[in-house]
Image (cartoon, rainbow, N blue to C red; front, side, top):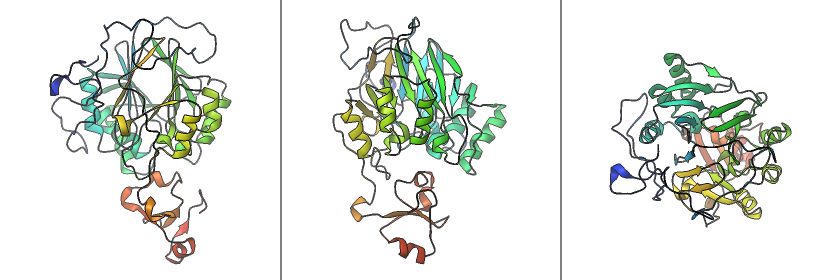
Length: 390
């Protein structure tokens, strides 16, 4: 399913590119600009694996679960971490089967559709909607409309937003039903297998209701946690399922509220992949997270610097389409030079600390950074958020 590694023109870009067929009409979608390319060639499925090591970093870790017998692998696994700006979307391909985890924001649906077509995807065996935030399911209505989907993993949590309603309505129109995640339940994708880690139940915080999964392919393992924060990370660890992993898809776009010390020390990943938008207003990835990765020797890939990132596993080694980031630069919140104290929601008339998880769930049109004091905001008719207690 891999695109040509030779770059001879627009129609022969590497797998990191976003060149696709002419756009079809899609509900609620605009033009289909291409997702930013990595500019790196991808090794072909029939190419030889380098003897004695890889030109890009590899992995020889044991599978999650310790010294258990490694399942035999005959099919390559590809994981495409798509550059969808400040959002999340991951495509997994193995043995002629495809799986999609999240679909970016509302502007990304057609772009993701074209990317999947370029990878010769016709049917999605699994679709995972980790949680109903707009930056994770915004483009999912287009995907559900355009592709046949066999199993759609979603929690029972819905939000009273147009984005969430679009997804639910499209599912009804296509006759799809949601499959609720059950902790410990396993699913196969070609030679790969994934296990549900969370959530065990639903709370008030959408981020901490994220579907988290552990995917294994031979001796290689990859952890996906959506926007899970420290509370749900503890739940995953307490499940007894989670062990060492090779690759950690960094939770919550590299936010300080995720990637807790306890989680990182428990799973000890060799690599972390951060999906965030260049110059995003949240300051992702946060300095605390980058410092934690660096202190533990975790090599980092990030879509804001490198575009779409592609991992290839043969069951024992891992190859990448680019080298890890060498910058270790943290994000910088918009307005940080103006000493922003709080973020106001002009719709709900509440104010929050900038790092509050509620800020990321606001619509941009309602978001107002301010350097005003707490007392000044209360005088202006704003109430303090009950979650972050500013």
